[in-house]
Length: 241
Ligand code: GLP
Image 1: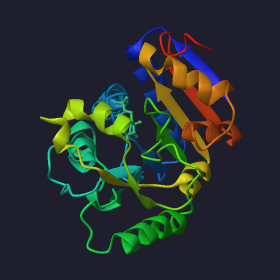
Image 2: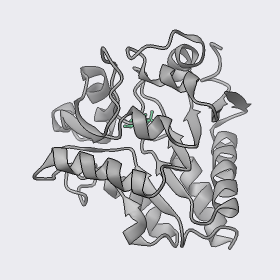
Image 3: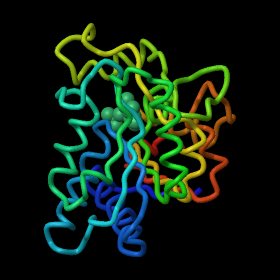
Image 4: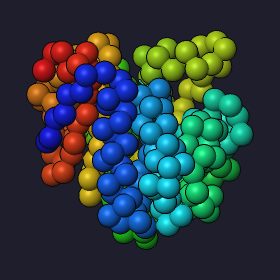
């Protein structure tokens, strides 16, 4: 595990975007695993800037997002689909047909999950997976549990996650109670992982993720087993290492 500690959020975003840019430059048909949440927004801004300066070409890139809320359509302003288009895809030359985000409103959600994993496998797996982390250690929406769950699946969100994500909704009651998330298999089979975290409130979980016991109670701790992971932190999130 490589750990890079940056001065602040802007430097973290720049560094994370450099790593993704290198991936896309070296392998223009890269399969990228992408994340939502507030942390990657700065990274996406730098990627857009790279594209606008003609330094980056996303025309052959394929993406798979980690997760989506159940019950929200992809045009719902709080859906992760909407987030990805407004914060990245609408501003770069990615082909919309190469964008994959699990549907939260699929009529047959189990079929949707199986097909999502199959689509990732058919592409040869993810080349570079970007990950943030929830305060309780969730990656994607793999919540603390008694076991690590391998396939893409439907998850009941914990109250902690609902509370944390209520900042994006008008009221906590509006936060969906379930989500579809990529499981640990696709994440751990990614050839490279880029993990980012910011702020003092993530310091405890970052320390557990890097130095703690590997346990499904701290889902991100499984990343200690990944052979090629780069962790980019700001000074605050690294303060308990
Ligand atoms: C969300 C996403 C995660 C993300 C996490 C942290 O719930 N499912 O992929 O890493 O929350 O979000 P933030 O970056 O806003 O702290």
